[in-house]
Image (tube, rainbow, N blue to C red; front, side, top):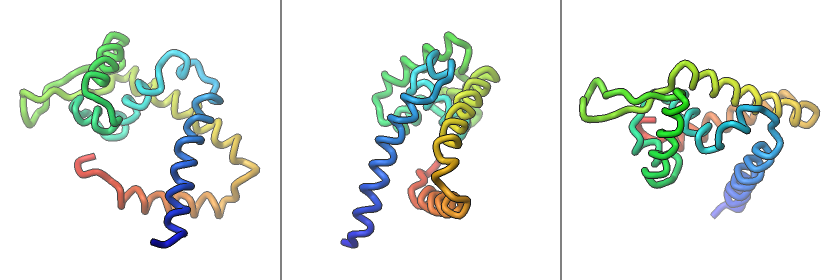
Length: 148
């Protein structure tokens, strides 16, 4: 196996694990105090991909459906999501963000973007950022799940 590929995978894992941890500890936003990382991640998935069933959300988050059910219940109580019937199959229930839920996602994203921009501003050149974006677009297309 190509040693560069092994190094790339290890670097990717390091960035995901340590980068996520650093952002979670460093982003200073009331939104991140009010909602759990898992709740925000769930809402972000719905915002990005549209209404989806709880089972699909559980699969994307890599957790049991009961964990997602608990998150859904709490977010529904806060009026950030609502459950609708699928237009294709009336037996299928889809989780959809409310306008307030979309607002929470925007606030969370903005806090992360501002933190990362400040963190990278003197460390990453425009050329490096362009290369990063192009590479990750390609990786996303290779890894993209069917139906997401």
